[in-house]
Each structure stands twice: as structure tokens, then as C-alpha cells.
Length: 167
Image (cartoon, rainbow, N blue to C red):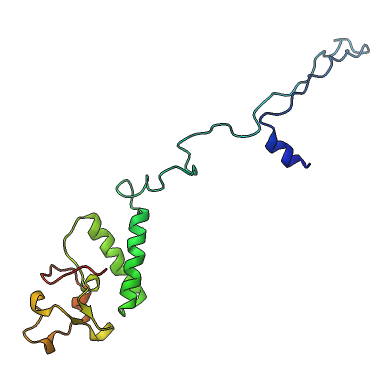
């Protein structure tokens, strides 16, 4: 059995008795020091502990996040990554997709009701050939052949009557 295994099994340091008092050396005038040495017993392992410790397994990891700081909660991070995946799948460049997903985090915090076309289930096409599948309700065009969307409009926060959130 090695020393680490023994430490794990013992809650406190083993009891060690104090040393026997020493006799002073007779050759000195002051007579020397008479005393003994004993260890201070202290717990070896952490017993109980602070329930609010940051690394406690039952602690809430989001307790210091928004609204108490600018940090995103776990749920916001999951939403951010899902949006990032959707935006890049629809043809947005990675840096643009990150910028848009970050803009939407701020929008969600501000409880803004505007949307971008990349969030809509009616957005069809890829990158430069985006089209609105609900163009009549959205008021994008008069005829279906004119339902193409420019990139600037797809990235713009707006209120749309034809918006349906993507699954």
C-alpha cells in the first residue's frame, strides 16, 4: 500500500505522541531549554467544504452570467451555436454568421421583436440566391419571380408579417 492510498483512507493525520522532554546541557550557564515537540493534528482531507464553492458539482454554472455580467448562459451558448450552424448552412460566411449570432444574443437580451431572414423557415436558396417562400405575406414582391432577396436584407433585423421560426 503506497502513501497516497493510506492518506485517502485516513480522515486525520495519525496520532503521534509528543517527544520526551530533553535535559538541558550542563555546560551552559543558562541551563539550556527544556521542552518537547509535538505535531499539530489537522484534517488531511477536506471534510464538508464550502457549499458555494465554484467547482462544486451541484453549483449553478450560470449564476454569474447575464444579467449579472456580459457572459452568456449555457442556454444562450447552445442557441448561439445552433444559429451559427444554421447561418453557415444557409451560405453565410463564418465571420458574418458569428457577427449575426452575436447580434441576436444582444437582441434577445433586449427583448427586441425584430428578426432576420436567416432565422425564418421560409428562406430558401443558398448565399447569393436567397428567396422568400412566403413572399406574399411578407410583402417582398408582387410576383413570385421577384421574390429573390438581396444579402443585405437577409442580414437586416426587421419586423416581418410572413416570419415563421425555423425548427
